[in-house]
Image (cartoon, rainbow, N blue to C red; front, side, top):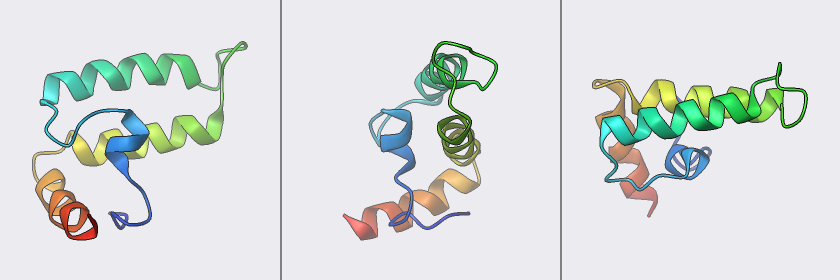
Length: 75
């Protein structure tokens, strides 16, 4: 898992630290479609990778609490 100081996954997904899992999933889907490398108009492989990494951490019920601890310590 990446360090909270290095990657602000909530900022990457443009959601609040209090966001519900359903909200995180909806926003992820929207951003993933927009930045997917196959999207010829708005595709961005680096941004897509960041979004996917953030979603993998924040959607996992085991990794999100660990991330939140370091996230709140950095604030």
